[in-house]
Length: 171
Image (cartoon, rainbow, N blue to C red; front, side):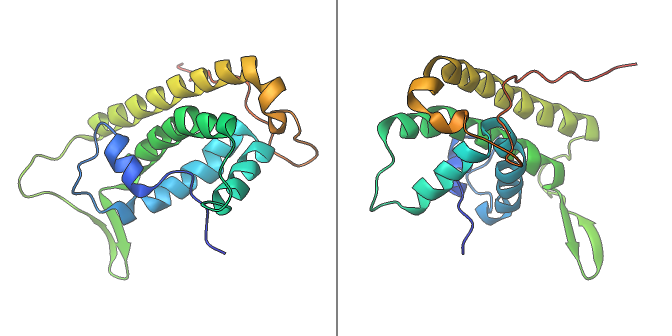
């Protein structure tokens, strides 16, 4: 069974403010898969996540209901796009092959410092968190009437993360 992805490679390249249109979109898939299965599932919870997997698999024959389509298009996809971009930035310059680990460099431009890359990753995380806050505000108002999957997680399901704020400790 093929992995169901909530956004397309083209969506990420087209909607990300820092991705070049010439980027090999297939290199984004591992970051997209990780972001979706690890981070997004923790944000939206197992039952809502599984709802979208099933709904996307049923396309185009069975359309996604309007309230769920709105949630996917306007809240979940933007979160996932920025999480994927942040994850992609962590490893975009590296390739592992039989010969070892290699770092790609561009002939026409200067290479950013590790600090600059960390700043770019943080910018994308901040963008994802902003969309997550909007998502949580939306769910606080509409979940009980429109999204029963938000509250139906049980046992070993991952429950949604009801707060988006993460605090980094600095000592």
